Image (cartoon, rainbow over all chains, first blue to last red; front, top):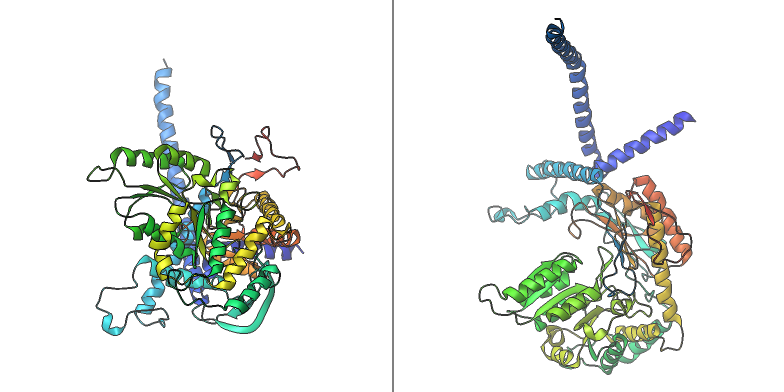
Length: 81
Length: 518
C-alpha cells in the first residue's frame, strides 16, 4: 500500500515537472532529448561535486583555521604583559 | 485585496475590484517554460529549414525565397511552435445550440494538431462555460424562437440591400424605437455586426484634429475604429482615473501637438465590462471627469448590456446614473440577447447624423428579419412587456450565479481577476503547458471552457475565462465547481495567497472590514 501511494505521489511529482517545463506539450522524441539533456547535466553536476567538493571544503577549512590561528597569535601578544 | 472605494459619494454601492499580483515563483517558472519551448522552437525551425523534418506550416514559394521574409517575426514563430502544440483547445466544432449545455464533435489529431479528423462521435451535454449567453436566450424553443420562426416565414432570411437603399424594413424601425426605450435615450440605430458598429462609426464621429482617449485594454474593434478615424490617440492606464485626468488636463492645456490649437473634440472610449479582465469601468468618475473637462464619452456596453443592473439595462443602471450623461451608448445584441448585431443610442441629432454618414449604414447589409425579431422578443422579455416575469427572473438568476461562482472559486484558492459583479470570470493559469492541460482536462470531465493565451493577453498572464449564464442551474454550477476544484488540485492552479474566510450568510455592510486573511 505504501509503495503504491509512494509511486503515485512520484508520478504526480513527475507530472508537475512536465507541466512546469512544458515537456507535457512535447512530442516523444523531444521529451527523450529534453530528459536526456537534463539527466546529463545533473550527472555532470553531481560528478563535479563528488570530485571537487571534498578538496574545496578541506582547503577552505585549512584557510579558516590558519586565519583563526593567526588572529589568536596577534591577540595573545598584547594581552601578555 | 478588495478595494472598497467611496469616492466622495459618487458611488452608491461598494466597488469591489481585485487583480492579485502574480506570485514571483510562478512568474519565474512561466518564463522557464516559455524559454524551454522557445529553444525547442528554434530546434524545430532548424530541422524544417534543413529538410530533416517535413514542413507543414505556410512558407514562401521557392521563387520568393530571396524576397523579404514573411514568416520570421515573433508572431509566426509563436504560431508554429507554441500555438500549434495546444491548438486543439480552440475552434472546437459544436453541433447544437450553445445554451447551458452543448454538444461537440469529437476530433483527434494524429500529427500533433497540424490536421484534425473527426471520429464521428458527438460528445453530448457538455456544460457550456464559454458562450456569451448571459441571460440564456440562446434557445431552440420558447417564445423568442417561435416569434423568429414566424417572421422568417413572413419576411424570409435575406434583406439584399443596405439601410439607405431598399433594406430599411418596418421591423428595423420597430427595433430601434424599442432599443431607445430600453436604454432611456432619445433615439437608436441598429447595425448588422457588432464589430462593424464600432469600427465603422467612430470614423464618422471623429476625424483629424480630434483627440481620442482610449483605455489600455480596449477591444480590437474600438482600436480599429480609432485608427481608421485619423484622430490622435492617447492611451490611459486601465480603469485608472488619475491617468485619464492627467491626459485630459494635458490635452486642454497644451492643445494639438504642433499648432497648439484647441482640439476639435475629445472623445473618451471605454467599455462597460472588459471581457479579458472581468473589470467594470468606473463610470461615475468618468462622467464626472467628462463634465469637468467638457469632453464626450463613448461607452461600449458589449458585455454589460443585459448582464448588469437590477433590470438588465447595463452599466449605467448598475451605478444609478442618468443615461443622458453618456453621449454615445454603443452595445451589441450578440451577448445577452442571443442574436447578432450592434446598436448605437444617443441624442436624436447624433443618430440622424449617423444614419447618413456612417459607413455601416451606407454600405453594409441591414439586419436579417428573424434576428431582429429575436432581439425584439428578448428585449421585451427583459423589460417585462411580454406580461411575464421571466426577464426579471433571468437577470436576478445571473446576478446570483455570478456572486456564488466567484465566491466559491475565490474560497478554493484560485486567482480570479475582476469585479465581484461581473459575469465574466478570468481564472489565472500563467504557465503555457497548463493552458493546454486545463482545456483538455475540463473537456474530459464534460465541461467546455475557453482558455486564452498570448496574443490576446500579456504573455505570462494566460487565463481560463468562464462566462456565466442565467441558464446555468445551481446543480450545473456545483458540478462545474467540483470539476474545477479537481483539475485545480491536479494541475496545482491554486496560486492565491489571500485565503478568503467563507461567508457566514451575513449581508455586506459598512462594518465588515477584513474579509481576507493573508
